[in-house]
Image (cartoon, rainbow, N blue to C red; front, side):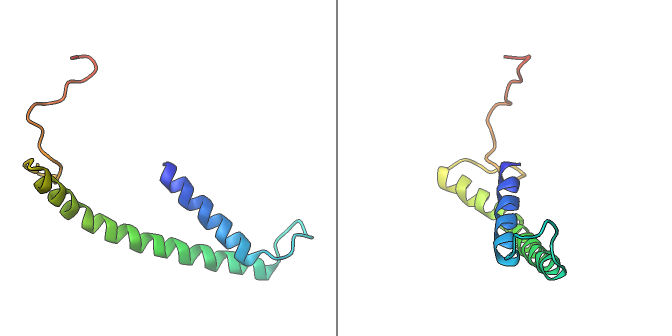
Length: 91
């Protein structure tokens, strides 16, 4: 959630600085509004492409990391734990 909010805040700041040049009016002009719409759309599309690539690379990275540490990888690509973790009620 924190990373999402950071990306959202950076996107807002970038598009605002790029598109809004006159702060004398309470409302946005038509030009500013269309600039903000296209700016946000471009950044959202770029973020979706980056996240798609990241999701595709994560399993390979986790398997490589597990191999480097000598731990067998579980079915999800995460290192397999020798014993099940105890929950708060069991510990």
